[in-house]
Image (tube, rainbow, N blue to C red; front, side, top):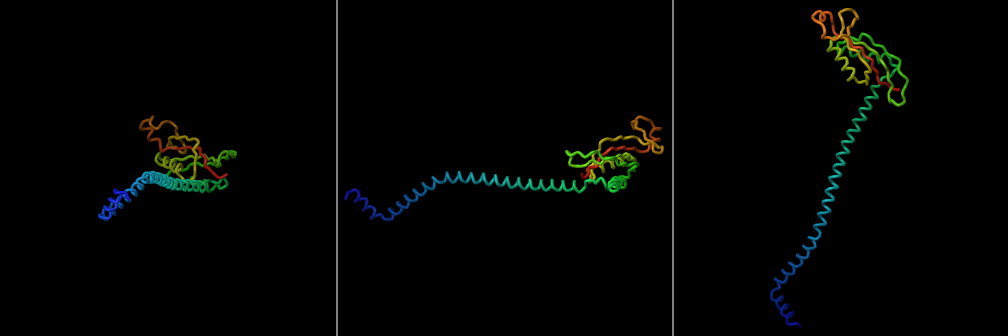
Length: 203
């Protein structure tokens, strides 16, 4: 046997505890080296999974928002469909306008349904035209107009004429409200609003 190898074996027999510690240290060092090689791969995999998780979270949040928006759109479409006028139901359509009198204290002097224009296939709704005249104080007439615009039924105002109402019965003056003196103020009593509008109805 090689003398050097014999000396090494003798040294190992003499210090068995040191030999075991050295062997364990070497084994742990080798294991640590292999684990260190895997750390980079694990970090890359962890970053990829984290990005996938963030993308999935964003998708889930966006999907929830889209579902809420879709539900709101369906609800709005349902409300529109439920409040579309039916041309044949003339008393109900007329009463819709008269209902605003009690709320606004304005007076509906005239209400005339007109002949509906020919159906347009490019439009999803039918147009039901009306002309009406509303009288009262400025605040009352303005409240009536706001009630029309914010009511449950869809109304399209095509034209209007806003005039000063004189003290005489049924007379109206279309001149500017601020052009006269005290005599003009005494001879006026509120305002008159003439409207041409269309109710949107079912075809």
